[in-house]
Image (cartoon, rainbow, N blue to C red; front, side, top):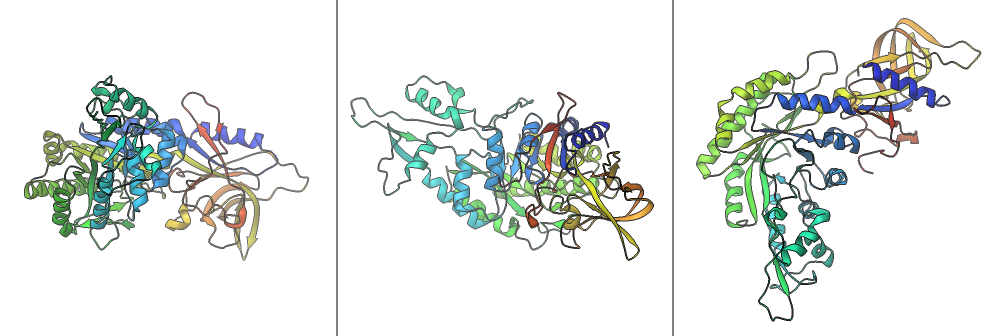
Length: 507
């Protein structure tokens, strides 16, 4: 544990003497440093996105803005959370079961690519794209165009394609005063370090009618919807992990057998409105073997090359998903250096680069897991049927990962000297202890049979590697216990920054 984490916990304890410590600490400076180091090792045509499902805390999103190419989201809630931090950063929109209203909203929020999960979803996207081609009058109201009409609210949203500045751009274009640069700002990432083309340029074209016509109208040509087809490969060569989403029957993605029909749909029904830009794969989660992961990426790239030749495609993007693992038992985790070395050597990746294509990765757990700490103070200790139990202020309603994955979560102890009572302070020495939470269920256990040198009521158990899939997958309100506090460590200073407003991904 970093010394600054211990220092932060002592400050938290001093500031909250009357209540047991229960808090999350996120080391934002550590996250940024790690991601910068990861990017330095990546080949030139590869891009790193953050999959915010691992931890959608707005301050983490904000901290990663200058460090990643963009963000991958799997719901409208996640999408809006990113947009609340940045109106322009590139977004990849994935996840099965997207509703039509969500697809419309995703386009209004200027997503860069949509990951298409099924033929039905593709048909819905094409239908929505057709609806978006409308004619409006000079005041932003809808005028007749066959039998197609949209609600006034949607009309107004169409006039703001790139966020806050879009209305000004539209006015300039109507007056003939805007230059070509006005059309390409929506896809640019805040703090982008690389000189790259825009992921999803937002182009607005307004056609003026002939002079002398009293009712002025403009034709608004919205940009093509850019999609990546998510494919569930039929292959036995994929690595096996606890969570597998590809290579077997799955609700995720479409089978290879559906690819030809999807391409035909795009070429016939979606022509000029929906463009196939590439493919998306995400076959597994929490893989530890960097060599096997590189082989899986090679399989993806070779498959895409076959499809390019068979269907005469121009592929701009291959999104290889995430799945980079983190261990919780002290064993070696994913070797990013080895993985990127193998990527550098990949001939298939080089051929993709020669054709101007990019290789995307959308990592979540690997970026943030090591930089989150869940701290819970011991409130009681008891011996039951010959075994010791330490009860902490907190539990699986805050940190559900050990119960979800069935593992003992790693921890360290921060010793405190505060004890205000005249009676003796309960403690154990050189014992095995079960660390349990405050819930009325035997499943509320964070670590079983932990060997401790010393543990006392009032000491703080700090569960390390709690930056991913911890708080936001937990059942926060079960039994109505208070939520933990949230603290953030930044690069600019060494003190603790508290934020008690952010409570859950749904707020």
